[in-house]
Image (tube, rainbow, N blue to C red; front, side, top):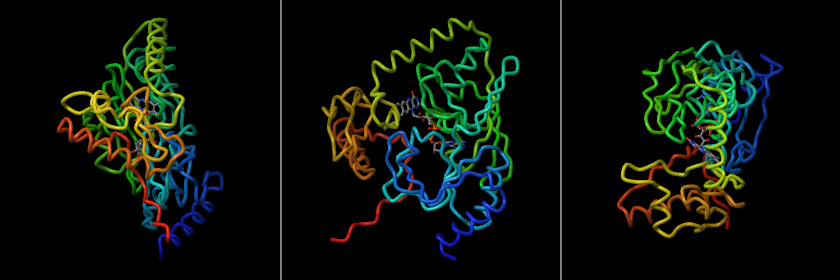
Length: 313
Ligand SMILES: Cc1cc2nc3c(=O)[nH]c(=O)nc-3n(C[C@H](O)[C@H](O)[C@H](O)COP(=O)(O)OP(=O)(O)OC[C@H]3O[C@@H](n4cnc5c(N)ncnc54)[C@H](O)[C@@H]3O)c2cc1C
């Protein structure tokens, strides 16, 4: 069976198993990423309960259809040829948040901003840093997202979900091996469905004020009204990527519709180009910084999918 035939069979099996499961064929990934780039996914599923996640994983595993997990797509660059396989979008549907004393258990699809607000409203400290990060709890834990001195790994106590065969897993904080924009899940394909956070008592008004302060600072420095995936590159050991890019004179430099932001050199933005433009810009920035500083910048954005087929001349 070809991959296309497998995907057609997968779709009909899934529809037969659960008529309420949201499925879209040839879904343009540009609609599901904050960069607004990326070709079509063969099949995009948006589960709204844990059982649907397990059903999707088991069915795809049985037919050997490749699976890609996404959250809000705020750290993704999907190539122009799209993603051949099943994309499971864990965003907005599975978003229940429960507060128990000083712990919070959240579903992976909840937005980090909502989680951060729920914590502050419950007078729980430890999550104000996440209020302006435009991703989901699942994506934030996978990436160990962070800002203003905080990161998800500091407050995560338990991560639950499934491996790609649909078998459940539970990882403690220590199992997750958090590092700078790194978690163990980058080396294993697993789907996060729930995360438990261990927080500490704080003062509601002070926490809300801190969130406002962080978000004001963010809006002053970052190109929030333009299409981006946040910081394009990770912070290198010997400095800041944005400072190095700026010192190379690359602010405002563009290739096609991709540009190094004039407001913040750490952000590359899409001004109506293609993923190929964006990749070419990233490569140019890496080469220029390496030539000047001897440092090879490592992408922070996760790059997925296939290049578009070459056009016939
Ligand atoms: C304007 C802007 C500002 C930003 N500021 C920050 C910042 O301050 N700090 C920061 O760290 N990041 C920042 N980012 C980047 C981004 O928001 C974070 O990396 C965020 O954690 C990504 O979450 P997401 O849900 O969008 O994940 P996606 O981008 O959809 O996915 C990111 C990775 O997580 C994996 N993933 C997503 N959900 C799951 C799941 N449920 N189970 C398993 N794996 C999953 C995906 O496979 C992918 O590899 C910013 C982005 C933008 C656009």
